Length: 296
Image (cartoon, rainbow, N blue to C red):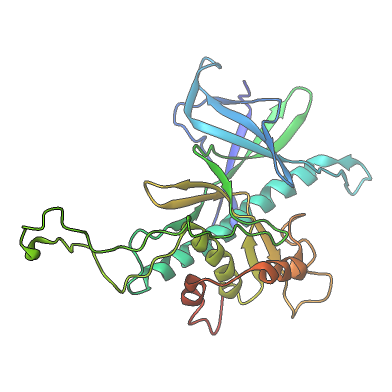
């Protein structure tokens, strides 16, 4: 149990110290063996603990650390990887916050589209925060912590241009008039509730790919959010994404200053180009990217 712990959230452009997630939490525990890994991060089981140091309180959590921590040198010439870890976790939280802002704008755009099927999925990125821990051998270090995603984990695109293709099987069935079971029944009893022949239907995968396309236009053609992975909550019709990548390129900035602005998975202009080289616009892409003259 680690009682010497501090938790920070990224709010309004700065990191603010806050209480632990659960009101009864007095410390935390971090599993030593990673259960998963991505291109840039390792994932560990993480728990908040009660007074006795062994009872888990609150929801299941996941802690993440960088796979690539490089030591930095301070003004006195001393090597210190604490700085690298701190930069990594803070950059990760800022990236998530950027993706959350874009997701909110995308959902608002969906809400404004006339005749879009009410069951069309919305997108979200799970909240994350920073925990600073003290360990008897590792000393102080920082980890990213977020809720554990339960359900079928899937990936809809990556940061190298790959995108899941939408098959006919994946597409939602367009509503059709119900057939009468009894020919003797009056034709007037056919229930047309909720039926609209002009409704726009799109698959979940088309929503995910349209979001990545939208992120580029919404940012004034500077950022493209991809590497979309996580869980699709079918009951609430909500994508819960985690660990996104952002490709960044600003033609107005000096050459080289754009490089890896959002970490190792940021492939800049090349990453953006790879996405569009393999991207086939669906009907939703055209609808969500209309009306942008001066982007954010």
